[in-house]
Image 1 (spheres, rainbow, N blue to C red):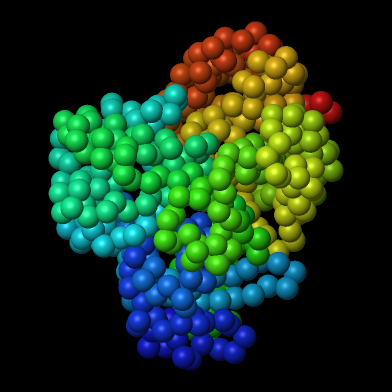
Image 2: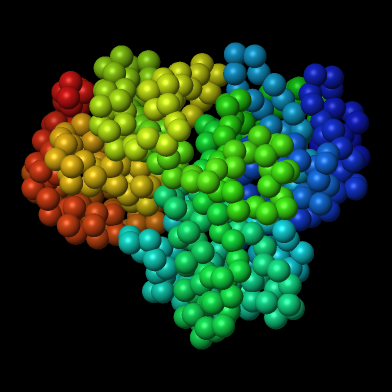
Length: 480
């Protein structure tokens, strides 16, 4: 079967939506680092809405290391299909990506695109920011050390941004606006500080000051459940298109993008595309990180322990679903300050989204990178609850489930997908399911801040939950 491309776009079968603008008239004004499934299903879909009126905002997608996406989309001229998974599904071809680059192979081209960019966005996951547990740039991170030694050929997001901004400063041009789209609290502020710190560390004080004073790094929050692409999706899309698509993506119909209102002349285009511009992103961000992402991690680690494979399967377990809802309404909601968001209604909407019968969101995918994600999804909530004197028994359960997940994977020889995989495998192999196991995890400073790890209330709650999970009676924790 023929491949999806500009040349075959007119042959797409009826019922599939196609770009409603002239792709040939678009120009690349956005550079995106980390063009995985989420970016292509989310931010690129918003940009797709913008291009009819703002043809200068097409995307140059930059993969930092791997050529897989470039190899899939280059023969398709950047086109791919997006399937919306609902009771009444839809399929559309997205044309917002005009070029896909591999940074390691074409550094000069990436830097040229950064010179031309109005906006730079990023979805490189939490681990891609090379931050310490305190949220500062980790100058000992191997990628950061590499970039400080060879700043003209960076490998990290921070290194690329610093070099791109340096080139703009030298040329006397305005800096691009950088929007982090990853699940970090205060993501824009943290990234801006990291880039300025990097410039300082490479000995360019003037650049560091220029970045801090002139470059905008608005905070943002993104939300849409996006299952991984699988063979079933590829087959379904091929049948609907009448063409082969090497890498389609899928998501639920709901999507949300909240950006701090620091976009200047581009604000109107973003707002018209459905992006929420907010004076303060924090209330949206905290609610999403703690309620959606925190509940997702809870469903992942407990659901896998109970033998479930997907979020939908886990939500069909009445005891597990009830536990997660109690945790959201009684424990997590108490940590959210009023900010224009109807928290009870938002929780109700999330629970309905988790039960979407058309979404196959695999728990194993959500369980990846727990050492990086859990600080923001659960541990900050736990720390605030302890400070306020609130109980943490339920909140400790998913953390204990993560420990049990690591122990079982290590003992059974299954791979752990995590930046700390080697460390976690060593810890897990040393665990036997006994009460000393919790302490072996709590000494991991990269996961647990020392003051939190030393709190006897948390240690007690973790020990109780871990014992139940390790003792082959995981159902007992669901009554909390």
